[in-house]
Image (cartoon, rainbow, N blue to C red; front, top):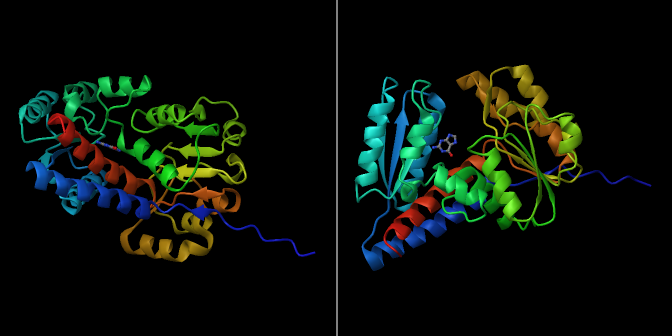
Length: 314
Ligand code: GUN
């Protein structure tokens, strides 16, 4: 008898879902303008000259233009003090024109990040990082939900992946992804395990997961032996690799384009999940790039629209 070849993991394309969400937001933005004369506005604050952060903010500003949200970029030098940034946040809080405020993270080390995030008016906190929004989410009464975690749930829902009752494992306990996505999965009735650098026998724990979320920040950290056969693997990592041999090992048959990219611009992007090994074991997985990152931006658009509506009681 001929043994059936196992199909590689199905790729969960972030672009399709992100485009759907952006189209829905765009339609609602048009309606707000036509019926209420309201045009949502997002203030995007970038401090310092981190290359990756600059790219992320540019992508967010571009998405605003796509959906009809006005964006207001505030680019500040790396020398900005906590006091100066607080003054800007207060001004944006008070400005009646501004619906959403986004402070791109990470901030320069010298700035007191916690006090900045606490200063953002909770009603304009479209990133969901203010303690009151974090607390509401932890209580199961979400208001503004952080964009990447919200995008992960949206991607699962729109691909008909049932969450209730499944074992979900989140690797990483950051404020931006790990903790909030664990809360959201719990709210959707998954059995949730959160793993981190002190977890003993990590692969044994992650291998129990039907939904595995990798948010560690280490290239290709999740290997084949970490994955339960057939699992849905959500890769939140965005890491640069610069070595051609690494690219060959990680991308197998797809390495050609990656090597070209390294030769042309010096790097290619890889997630926290080993793509070739995951393809051999997982049922579905999100790619990097083209996966969760696109959903983060789409959900920011949705949160900003929501802020504009809530602020006006619509
Ligand atoms: N840095 C990494 N992810 C995010 C995000 O979702 N929002 C902001 N403001 N900064 C980030």
